[in-house]
Length: 266
Image (cartoon, rainbow, N blue to C red; front, side):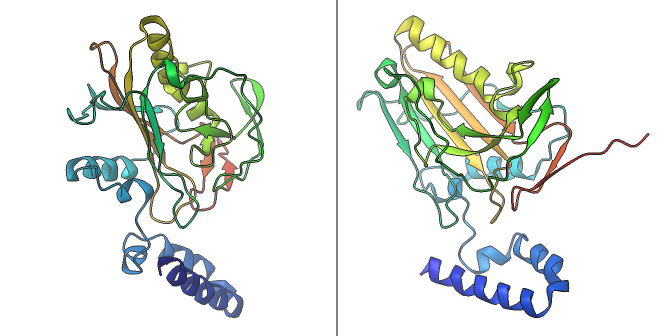
């Protein structure tokens, strides 16, 4: 039903665009407003569909989505410690991982796990270039003085933690700065993934883990990801952070994935 409704709206959008192409910007603005998608019952971003998350949690996510990347500060500490419930920290099912189904726009949803050595990869990482996540409009850029690419096929739960390769439910369009900024790794996902992976390897303990991509309305590129982790057998690991899906020096159109280099005027 929801897909049919979206198809109908898309057809109307195309007809109007063909007849009156000068109205494209107005149409774009309408389709990215907060209320239009909800009126069509298609607005729920992936994290909003997870009924297990409470109202306070959803409110925090909405607040995070409203924030803008300033081009420098990539990470926000949401809470000093992770806020998992006792039920969520239960070890009765051992190690496990779960990935939300793609939504009606093929966007990834929440990825959760009880991480342990049991889930870590036992084979070398495989090629994942066949996966084209939403908003995948990549280009070559210069980052940290080196030739690079604007976007990575970013894992919600890193390969070193899950052993997941070309899992479409676990790969999203993430900027290089968000995914792995080796000049300032504390500002990227790889820092937190390494912290958890090193802890598990050293202790053979377990870590409750959740990564939530935050999309605005019908945008194809996530505004950022919220990463939560809590070690089970002790209190060594406990964090709740938000990382902006931005790239210093570039302006990203989150609706489509297009981007432009920011020109600095003197």
